[in-house]
Amino acid sequence: THPRMDELARAGVKVAPYGFGSTRSNNWMGRIQRILPGDQCPSQPAPGLWREADLVVVNMGGISDGLPWLEHLLTTGRRYAIIVQANMVAFWPNDQLAARLRRVYGGACRVFFVSEDNLRLFRIQTAYDGDNARVIWNPMNPKTPEKPIPWPSSKQPIRLAMVGRVEPFAKGQDLVLEAFACKELAGLPLEVDIFGSGTWVETCDLQIRNLGLQSVRMAGSASPSEIWSTHHALLMPSRHEGTSLAMLEALWLGRPVVSTAVAGAIGLIEENTNGFLIHEPSKDAVVHALIRLHEARNRLEAMGSAAARGIRERMPADPASELANQLLTAASSAVEGIAH
Image (cartoon, rainbow, N blue to C red; front, top):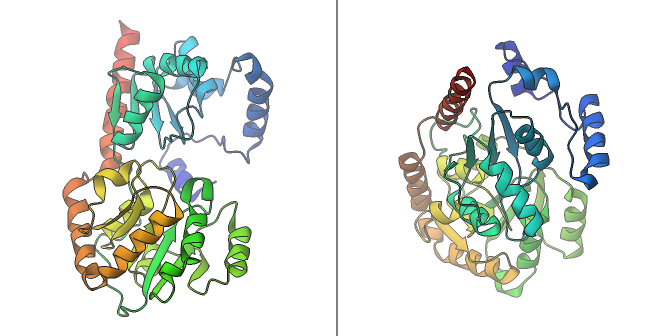
């Protein structure tokens, strides 16, 4: 299990693994896959735990990932809340799916999105008009340093870091490779290190070699302190996001962000103040944003300072506690409802 889950267990929280590596999960997911064509859900998912819970929280990567679970919770009268971590234009529900989503979202005591833009898009995709939806801040890793990290001693070349899953469908690493193969960036003192693991690591490394890119490297894993002590800015050409934790972390630690204008970045990145917006997920848009970054090279440190100040002014002091309080309120109302 994840070390953070072990900490929860030691603190007295009842933890039962349902990750894809667990026996329970394999049996459970197999049952879902067998039953999904009939739009049904297993009759007793995690029965002991769910019967004891005052509130079930379903945390989803997208808007429909946990739909079978949500339909089961709704039809069996359980109280539940939904957390949605991302949304995207590339996934558009048809009429039937939109109707199912309206039903389960409408039955939730709370629905949380991590960006205003994700919620706006969901309302358009599904014609959802419920008043139970809220926008929350994603809490950063508690091990993130409290203070900004000093600016790297070397100012040339400008070193950019991509931090996150190596998964082009979401994170856009392919766009960076195409951009650095363009003549417009040739000769500019820009370098990119790609940090993280994922489904495209080996292929990405091979494509870097195929394109003969000297300024792009696979960098494996590293801590935030290690990354931002030697890098000047975050590069995030994502095709879709929620509110990226890598972006929040970079801003918090005093680094400007170059990001596509998606979801949380739209409200947090101010052009030429704390970063640069890539206006669409395309090679040309990445190139143009990096050229603007290079033109502002003498102001990047000041932009990093503005980033650190700005995120501290906007982010709640303890986003995790704020979410916990909202969940406790929802759970309390569930208990009161049962009592009445």
